[in-house]
Amino acid sequence: MRYSGFRVIREALTGHKGWTPAWRDPAPQASYDYVIIGGGGHGLATAYYLAKEFRQARIAVIEKGYIGGGNVGRNTTIIRSNYMLDGNEPFYEFSMKLWEGLEQDFNYNAMVSQRGILNLCHTDAQRDAYTRRGNAMRLNGVDAVLLDREGVRQMAPYLNFDSARFPIKGGLMQPRGGTVRHDAVAWGYARGADSRGVDIIQNCEVIGMRIDNGRIQGVETTRGFIGAKKVGCAVAGSSSKVMSHAGMRLPIESHVLQAFVSEGLKPTIPGVITYGAGHFYVSQSDKGGLVFGGDLDGYNSYAQRGNLPVVEDVCEGGMSLMPMIGRARLLRIWGGLMDMSMDGSPIIDRTDIEGLYFNGGWCYGGFKATPASGWAFAHLLATDKPHETARAYRFDRFRKGLMIDEKGMGAQPNLH
Amino acid sequence: MIINHPLLGPRDSQEFTYLGDANLIDRPDWQAPDAVDRFFEYLYLRDNPAGDHRELWFHEQGDRSWVVVTRNMATHEILNVELASDVARNRGRSK
Ligand SMILES: Cc1cc2nc3c(=O)[nH]c(=O)nc-3n(C[C@H](O)[C@H](O)[C@H](O)COP(=O)(O)OP(=O)(O)OC[C@H]3O[C@@H](n4cnc5c(N)ncnc54)[C@H](O)[C@@H]3O)c2cc1C
Picture (cartoon, rainbow over the protein chains, first blue to last red):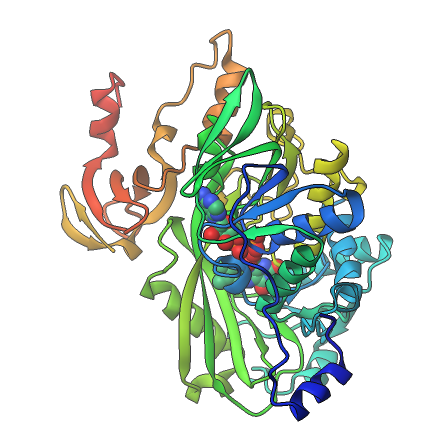
């Protein structure tokens, strides 16, 4: 069923009786050409582009819980392509271009809203760094605008300009950055993949891999063995756990990141604003809630929930940047599992096991990457060659010293 | 989380800084023939288990000792705390 304005009106007049489920609930078949492990944004996007752009093939996505229950439905929904390093920036800009056409492409309202992202700076050194990053973006054909203090004040007069411990000196703005309704991304890709014949199998956990003579044969699941010619793993925070079934140790640690939503307020915050002197970023949802977040809790975790010290730290950051939010009440807090890599950048690569491919290490920035990650992973699965924008995302970059370390933190995942 | 420090008793985990997997104690021999491979594994690869995890915490706001905490990554329950210097000595190191 195609969705359209006409359809909405027709359904409204006929009591909404004509809507059907957006995807099927098939039982797993004995084998597939491609099995994608993980029904998050990346796994679903991979299946969608694989079916649409690359191959007519039998494809399944295997998800241990339900679609959208992982990070794709837990993040703070920020999209941007304001990276500095060569290995990253073309990839994230490719993703931004895909976001710009996504809703037409998969015929689903994902509320892609390019409301702009503003990174504030508070010292001269930080302004220099932002100037450099903005130039790197411009060299890659990406929009970037450097604002001075007055420029920031015009956009966001309610920020703490008068008595701040770290006064605002200016900011780097990417007008094409913004937010996207995260659940709708999962649903839109799921529906698009399903309508092209992809089996989306929920409540089915991968608990083992069958490997013969260095070649993948398929995956063991809680619903039995499923054979596959090629297997792609895209399970975000569970990457180490799933790939250990293939005997692999990854350059990844799992960490917890929390997110926060306040009660609904009148529209005040036009885009995304990030604090440069503490870890705090905020946007306002269309329902009016402030959506914000900060740092990782800092210790390895698979718990999908964090602790109070970070709640305090994030709220302090918010208060020192925009004191006006002090009276707003928090409605919800939750946590998600981050696949933190050793240099803060992702991996999209094949493995030493023939037919087994890996996509992960997204840290806390993988939502914005969803379309490009799916496209590049589908490209790799279909052609055995890396997509041109994802060539640097290899496993062996750590051994070879070719890290893509935007923050320059080294092999300390909780600092990326 | 409360870390039961072997010398100081129960302390808030906020007094500590987190480093990571306790295998970082076992720095490879730089003169070994396969030192390059071993340093690669030491520096970059992790078990990252979804269960009990031995990890290094530094009591930065306290007595500045390193401790090895055994903690369940799925529940955050802390099962054991040892001084890292004891752990290292038990493995035959001088300090
Ligand atoms: C609080 C928070 C805020 C964030 N904010 C942003 C942001 O503003 N911008 C941004 O770009 N990124 C952000 N991120 C990061 C982003 O959400 C993730 O990097 C991205 O969603 C990860 O990819 P995914 O969608 O495929 O992951 P997920 O949705 O987690 O998908 C992985 C799936 O694999 C499944 N799975 C795991 N193990 C198995 C198994 N054994 N068998 C079968 N299935 C399995 C899981 O159930 C899950 O559904 C944030 C993350 C969090 C937690």
